[in-house]
Amino acid sequence: MPLPAIPRRVKIGDAAAFAGTTPRAIRHYHAIGLLPEPERGSDDRRRYGYEDMVRLLWVRRMAEAGISLDDIHAAFKDTAGIEQSLARLEEALAAKAAAIEAQRAAVHRLRDVGSPLGLLSPLVTGRLRDLPPGGLRSADLDTLLVSERLFGPLGAAVQADRFIVLATHPGLRADEDRLADAEAALDDTVSPDDPRIEDLAAQRCAHETALAAAVESSGLEEALNALLDREDEDAGEEEDGARTSAVEAVGKMPYDFSPARVRYEERVVELLRTAGQDGDGDGGSTPSARPAEPGQRR
Image (cartoon, rainbow, N blue to C red; front, side, top):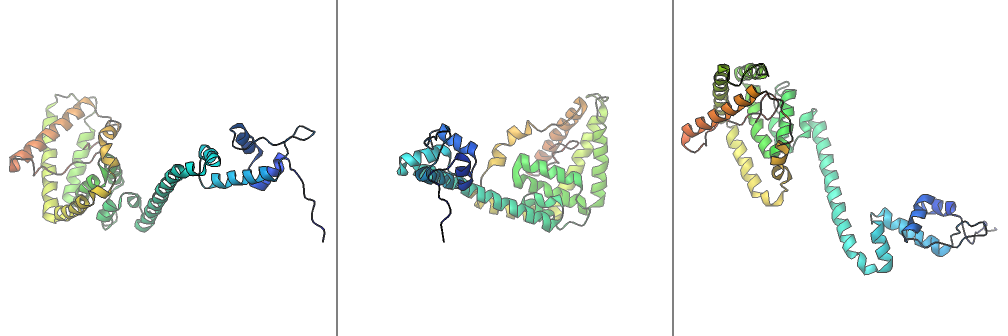
């Protein structure tokens, strides 16, 4: 059986097709000195021989492994010189693999929970997934999302207790809604010196005190403290990116507050701090932190 025609040299298009790349990529390899320029035929076109094709195949195989073109260039000059590049590449690939696994876990939680709650951290999702249908509102999820970005999963987990109490205490939820409406009415038509601000701030402080008492009596605080203890034990093994960037992140999160609303928020903070100091002298009984969302700033 006769062999098919075997070319002694091939044009750039055939070389690219065989190597699984494009003529444009091959020309780039020539431009950066990664692939030597081959001989040209009588028509002034490049012609690639066996050695050229072997070199091209090695270039493609290393590129497919994720090695940068600069490092491939160094590898052809000195095989030992690529060790550091390979070590960096291995670290990068491990990080990508971890990121992919985290994405798979998030998708699994989302499918398992059946709501956007599954996209939050496992710590927060685990504390809220057993709430009755409708117990967690869309705005509550928005607040937890922002809190995770600002304060990390632990900060959002602290806030999750607040939403558990609101979902299981209709009276407190109704009071929360009433206060939120009143706070939203503190627009630019209201003066920062309006006496209603002081009265509303006092109502908010009393509400937060009642919420804190409900959290304490429900045993949620003890369960959270156990989680915090476990997190402290593992703190050295976890990254702290969310917490270290909290100050910067807070400065980039917009809240369209009027001067009256800003004054109100300041008074709430002052009253809550005073209530904590009156409770035990060191602020330890300060009521739970409020949601970090437009209308209810942390």
